[in-house]
Image 1 (cartoon, helix red, strand yellow):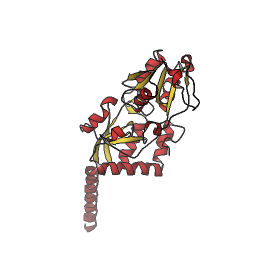
Image 2 (cartoon, rainbow, N blue to C red):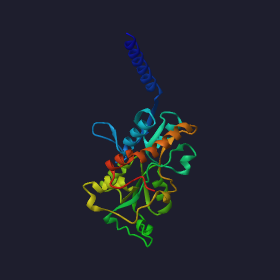
Image 3 (cartoon, rainbow, N blue to C red):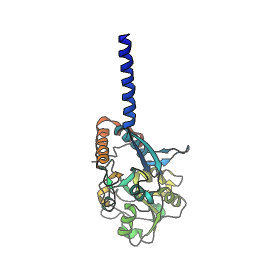
Image 4 (cartoon, helix red, strand yellow):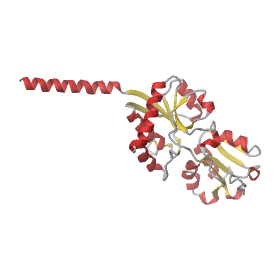
Length: 264
């Protein structure tokens, strides 16, 4: 009888411990765009998928959080975070000074390579520095996503080029494959998985070198966090480093890329 009471007491304690553990879990809402493959996209079954989504799920497990991942249009991403509509942005967002004035970021979780893809018919040329010759882009139409570093960079570097702005990368790709653009300027992985795999891919070519994050004044792609959430930021930063150390990051990375996108 005494042994039975000890066993029951132990079981009760274990049950209470499990309940307490569940109650200790943070409940967070994570926003991603859902229109930036292979980083984030909506699958045929309506689910959110991609590198960002897998990364967010693994991150939430590391910080002992119960997370709900939602789709949010790019333009409203930062205002919605500030308005507390969600808690984290995991959407391939570059850590730029103007964004850091509004929100905080985690340490970078990857480095984005940027490329310019043009139609071969456009006749764009590579300059002496290895990058596209701006003179060869005069009068051409190049598509970029709104409110990105790509938009700012393109308008500053190529003032005699018509920079056409889109709400999403996917919309820009549709105009490129539909013959309404001469070029696309974006994350090169996005371009490789989009227009360079389209039925019209033979008509397109990358022009010049790949740009790195520093060319845009970015520190890398980070997780957006509201200002004043220092404890959450510390947990997220630690989780990123832990994922790198224990192989979690590599497993997710290798599902989408044939190189280490984390960078230096």
